[in-house]
Image (cartoon, rainbow, N blue to C red; front, side, top):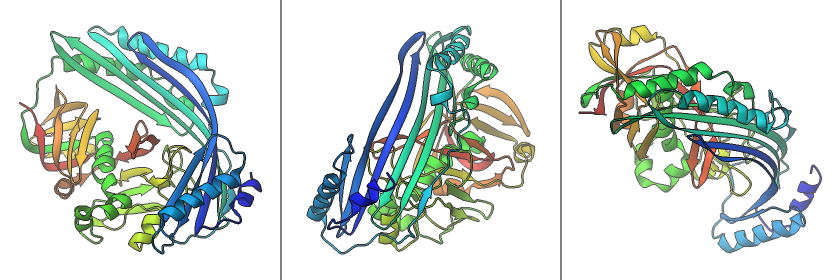
Length: 453
């Protein structure tokens, strides 16, 4: 490939061309209660060509790498039909690199499919044997992708990316009441991250049953403390997507809101996105345009400092690329996506954060939510009353809603206990679920609106 891809790029009438070839191996196992709905391994080989002419893109994907030059010419022809104005991508230095593989216990080559099923059978048995548990949902996914990328500017990069994701859900029911608790985990290729979870699965199932008899919180404004999982989801869903430059460039309302230098929180608030953190699902050395990964401060000391870019959005907005162009596989062109998005830790302990709360709510984990520009609604998976600075009784799941910027300005305490959640996946532009991680320390929010009785 080292010679084949650069050779295919030569001799075409286009401002810019890139080729991506990918070999992938994927395992999926899905349970619905006692029923094993899906189990299998798939492999595929394919690629794509993207060409740029006068601001217009041509895109061709394929499953057969024969006659690459013909595919390049077809993408260039499409681009010439779409191009209408002079435009150049943000400039980057050409890179030649073969990234060494750093995968621990690669699940595709070291763990048989039968062993994966046996592990999940055990977890499912624990859930379903818990009294008052009605059913379960389990979804397991692992992948190994070998990618070669070259462009007409001289860049050539080879990378191998592995990913593991497991979602377990226990659903309890009694007298017409239904409650559920989930557990999501993942890793960039280390199978041990999802092993030895028997005690966690047992506790998860028992909490789902306890929710059946838990009281509902009183609705209204109150002080809410978010655990690292829910706070990380808030950083990703409510704010991270607003920081993706393609959204901003295409939306006048967002352009008016997301003005660099605008204050959105107190000085203790720092929100970061970056693929350079080792050992996380959203980490990599180069994005899918061959741009080196970066650490980007979206908010630094409460002030909007930057946003996430591809080479195209960086050029259109006169800013620097951040290495955030990502594609879920070769069937799609790269678009602006998050990587590892998190709130940096502060100085407060968890006990400090709750100590002066006379009455409030401690919200943990999540299982759903929606966002619409700056407005959000999230469902916490668990909630507890806080009374006189202590964690008190279990509550039914609460719904948090509000304006993300008002909510960020109401964050008045940030913990020192940063944790990264690797159990989720991000969806955008029909490309889902893209491996990402998010995280936060515990945070305290004053005047947070919750739904309840």
